[in-house]
Amino acid sequence: MNYKKYKRIFVIVADSLGIGYEDDADKYFNAGQNDVGSNTYVHIAEKMGGLNIPTLESIGLGDLADIKGVKKVSHPNSIATTLTEASVGKDTMTGHWEMMGIKTTKPFITFTDTGFPQELISYLEKEWGRKIIGNKSASGTEILNELGEEQIRDGSLIVYTSADSVLQVAANVEHIPLEELYRDCEIAREKCKEEKYRVGRVIARPYIGEKAGQFKRTSDRKDYALSPTGRTAMDDLKDKSYETRAVGKIGNIFNFEGITSSVHTDSDEHGMKISTEYLKEDFTGLCFVNLVEFDSEYGHRRNPIGYGKHIEEFDKWLKVFIDNMNDDDLVIVTADHGNDPTWVGTDHTREKVPFLAYSKSIKEGRYIPERHSFGDIGMTILDNFEVEPSANLIGKSVKEVF
Image 1 (cartoon, rainbow, N blue to C red):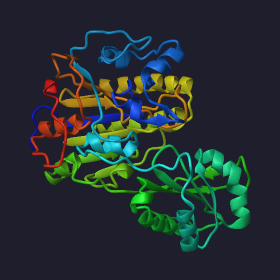
Image 2: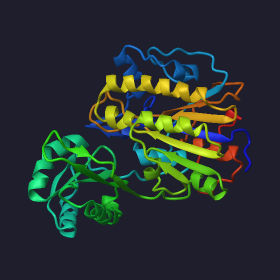
Image 3: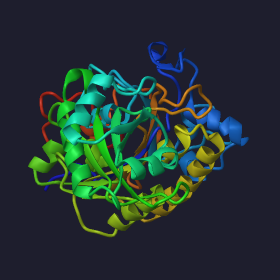
Image 4: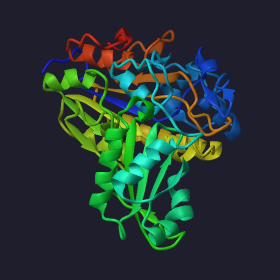
């Protein structure tokens, strides 16, 4: 197998760690206020009184924004810039799909503020043969404590959503069989392919326990995602026999298309440990990593201090990863959207994202001007492996990494 410079490319997505609102942020809203002024990195650093992130600083983060505690430094082994999003939307699937070359022109629908339409709820109740309770945006743990005992008593199913384009179905599998939950989610997935209900993912959320405060979600979660709307850079790589390894929820985001192997993770620390272990293995191709806790545990919960501490922990994990890289490895640290924890509401924020590309073999590292598609990531990967991109893919190779 051929490659121009790098035998392995690792793309690590710090989910939601944006770095400043985009020019069209006035068209995107949180709780009635547009996203103009949002900046996940900068506002977290301000709340923290400065971030202690020497690894990210050393690969050029300070070039990208005025982040308290982060200095501009010389970084001869890394290319630093920001990427703006060409697609319409500010959700996980749109951002990740664009990294692999898909431009989304119509955003995925969300039901954060209203819950799902009654006609959809009535349809699902009829097909499932059970009453639905919940039907609102909620934290998964909070809604179990609120409605878990009622579900046990009545044999109902809990349906809820979030700031993402998702329909989630929670069932106590000590009272409702897991196989039934999966079947019901398959029914919901099929119905939610209709344009007016077109959510990105339907998620089965099994749990156990008998009383509020004791409920615990199991590891049998299952996602039913829409497939990408066209071929991706991973499809092109896989067709040419390169490995495309997925870590975390990458597999679910792409409905496992274009992926040669996928590993579930229990935490961001676990995801970084798996990625670091992969450095010890002999393979050629891409490892695509999602670290979701930035978003799920801190961004949506509007916890800037927790978010900041998590960035500092990630910085330590990243140092271990970089220290174990080979000379012909490349790592790209990026994000898929923003989720400014100081902002109004609980939704994502429309932000540009970092592009920090590090390799021991880069000798003229520097800041380069902002680029205008997340798809530049996928195109850079295809360029490295000398794979012709499918005609539908967007983006341009970042030639400075070669």
